[in-house]
Image (cartoon, rainbow, N blue to C red; front, side):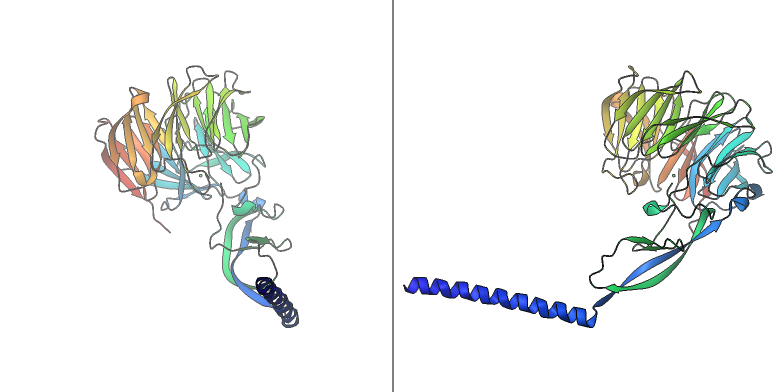
Length: 438
């Protein structure tokens, strides 16, 4: 009987505590309702700055040379290096003497990310338009044609697209702000004011999304492996996030929109090789038969882990770098060697671990890989399945490369470098144009 009585006492105590807890919750909740509980949060406030379509389409022009600040893609043609300044235009570098390159002019192109050249015509994106520019005199260019509204509206961080009726977003005005809300209110990461187009962000940054030796047709130049534009015969191929868009450039000054081929989400780079197109994406490599340049057809897909994926090709092998990062998702950092002897059935043969590989390029059996903090890596690929490391150049963070005529053009975070690689066992620095960090 004593044992039973003790047990009842414990249970009664638990019930009493539970009742007291519920009572305290009710008091606190009532107090919160009565006192209108509030809390404050600090946000970044971003107000978009728009450029009208009229101003956008009057903006292309030559200007005096400018310092390199935020560089993106790189292109080589006829002893000139064309370097993209992200969303602003293209630096023109006279590279007649790689030991002493001259920054000679800047082509103002708002919203520019990509480029390709055929003959004397440079094709560049300008936000939603494709612009054809005569570069016969690279220091005094002339816009000769424009195909309007062929690219999708620029997508900014967190999927923000802006008010398309107001024009294109060219900048953001940033301010700190305090938001006061009820204690029970859910706080989203971002909030778009549907009337003003302003954006509130928890984070402190807000930026635009978007940023190899190619087998080039006669009269075209050489692009880096991160390119989303390429030219094959009389066609210009361009990529957005999911489509390959073709332009007939039989008359280079008059690009005519052609087929639009849906490929899938998150396509990133394009590399023409022989009569094939190799398209890198975050999910794998797409291979297209391009024997009919006006209408490429997919013949295979090599699937890999989710990662950013530029790809180049030489002989029976494709070389694909996979890297991790915020925009790339995933955690893979490696070089994949893919056997494409049977083009319809690509097979992974071997992978080499890397630090965080970006662009890559090849000349003969020499492979160059931009491995970010891991430096510039040089390999002998006489046997691609047993590559031999020849050299690692550290102390900088390379992004992309173009090997041409024994000169390696390297875009890094701090400069545009050029190396003599006639002796692949020991690259020799020829020059550097400093990138000024803002």
